[in-house]
Image (cartoon, rainbow over all chains, first blue to last red; front, side, top):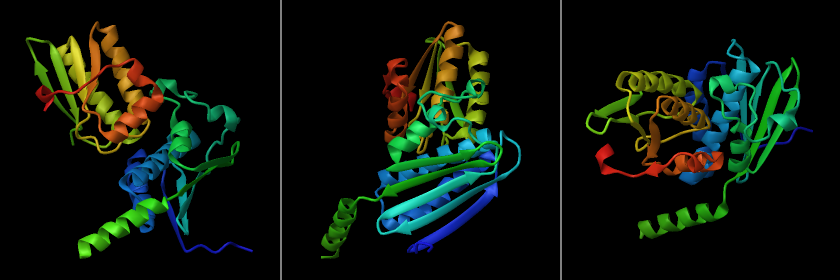
Length: 158
Length: 110
């Protein structure tokens, strides 16, 4: 049975790097329903930017395709799936290693997955060559920040 | 739209490049082109990238700075980064870039 979520969204756009800002800002607006701190929101934006860049320059290698993002909210958790129907990754474990890049000539640093992993709680990569790649990102928004903000609001209400 | 504000101090042969946009793969290409143009134009002894106005940066920033570092080095100059915002600093620290490139703070850059 399909799991029920408190909120869901889907986003699709053409694989142009000019859409990166659109993607991360849209996801940030969706994530803001969980009342994240500015830093948590920056973490999500950065991870989304890395995943979307991967779809555009590695998945589609700057040809035209569709990048899909689905977002789900459950409790204090956001779950994002970012996928393409591009060329796929032959060896995901190698691709995830810090500083590994297939495109050093484009000044790619090979830090994309490392950043996703350190900014999010969970990163999963599924890829099939010539079919596509799906990256699942999960992050729980800390309760403390919520409580603190609520308290600040209470205080300012008095 | 320009992504860089540049200032060249002739007596010090110092080129200050202030980035005035978010940095991702898309903007990095434009910043790279503008920066390389300015560097070739002035042939500075030192280049300082000012990050004071950078509110967002992903890993594209690492390649951008590392690429300019190599380019300036080939031309016999030095490169520094200045006024790193919190997010920018985190990404650079993660990449190990700051073991290579000095970080400075300075009012003369503003």
